[in-house]
Structures are given as structure tokens and as C-alpha cells.
Image 1: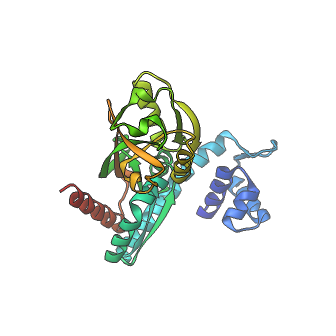
Image 2 (image 1 turned 120 degrees about the horizontal axis):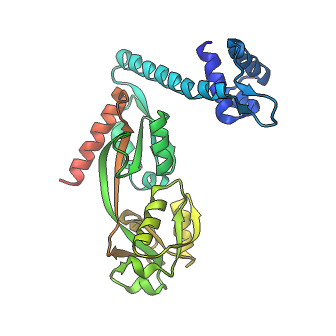
Image 3 (image 1 turned 180 degrees about the vertical axis):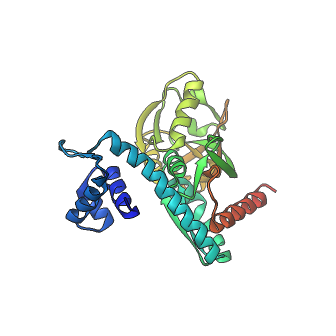
Length: 296
């Protein structure tokens, strides 16, 4: 077994397709099939080829699970060596939910790149739930998540805290109120982020705590689409306070929520006990400075 064979097998196992894996790896399908077959010279069948769709055998599942750990260790070793040889260079893979990217990250990235022009940042947009899973698997160096997170899996660095507001069309009866309580929303149609987003579960839980099951009329992964739906008076939603500056106040009204208020606490998370590269350390340091300046 060599690393290339293992990497090819992992791609096939992840995508459950030789065709898709060959496209992803930019090699021909016959070459890929041969490399995986060579891996099976261990006299253990890894892939059940009798089914129409690719399935892993029990041995294949073991190789897939353990192989991911091997590749993660190799990637970490490469990062160690890169840091030794290129002290002030590197790349950071950061997962950010789309809403957070729109509100905060353009200025953050600009400020950081001015200080560290040789550090490359790769931003990957996922919902916060998916960000956590990707950080846990080692696919991302850092991720932005809604706090709190599982402290046994992640270290976290808070950087922003806001209140959540209700967003309604200006003609809505609640638009004229100075504040609303959660239980006043029992009969409303909600437009929420989908289940990839922590806010989805958090808002549903807040409604359940207030004694009702929310009527979720629409779901989306794009905050601006949700904003347009509110502007057409198709429902209400709950967003962070910062969004108020992004919507047309002549059409959409933001109303404070009380009893209870809902906080929106964000932090950068990293996998506990994972090696932190020079680039990631500097980004964490920069974000800590931004947090301190904001809440000084």
C-alpha cells in the first residue's frame, strides 16, 4: 500500500463513484480502477462490485475510516515542515456561514492581508453546523460558529456578540411595536435558514421554549433571498442586529425581541489538540485583537 493508492481509494469511497472520483482526481477511470485494484492486493476486498452502486465491504469501511486519519496526519506533517521552512507564509482554510461572511469578513480579510500579505486565506462557505463537522474532520483549519460549541471537541475564540431582531414587512402589525415577545409569533409564517445552519435549530428551540411549534413556511441558505421574501410580505424571520443595515428600512422593519431576548455569539473554532500553523496562529491573534478593540 502506498499513499497515492490510499488517497485514490478514499476519493472513490467518499464519492461512491469511480467516474466522479476520476474527474475529481483528474486521472482516467481505468488508471483509477487499476490503482484501487492494486490496493486490494492485500488479499482483502474493499469494494463490493456486485451492486449497481459502489458499496464498501466491512474491510473497506475500516480502511476508509483509518485512511482518513492517516491522510490527516500526513497533511499535518506537511504543515509542520512548511512552517519550519517558510516562517511567515502559509495558507489558512476557514469555514464561514454566508451570513457571517457578508457582515464581517470582507473588512477582516482586508485588514489581515495588509499585515500578512504572504499568508493565503481560502474561505469556504458552509452553514455553521457543517463548518463544525468540517473542522472536526480536519478539513478546515478554522471555522466560524455560533457559540457555545462542544468544548470537548473544539477550542473557541469569541469575536462578536449581538442581539437577534425580528424582521417583518412594514405593513405587518408587529412593525409598529417597540418590541415583541417570542410568544407573539405563534401564528406567524417563518422564513428560516435551512438545517445546515445553527440558527435554524436555535430559533426553532426558542419558539418551542415559548410554548409553540413554529410554522416554517420557507427555508433557504441565502440571507438576502430570505430578506427578499420578507420584503414581499411572505413571512417573518429573525436575524442578527447587523442585518438591519443591509435591508431597505422603507420596506423591512427590524423589531427588538424580548422575553426572552436571543443572543448571537460568534467565535472562531479549531479542533482541540490539533497542531496550529503559524498562519492560523496569526489569524487567531488578529481576531482576538479585533474582539478586544470592539468590546473595550
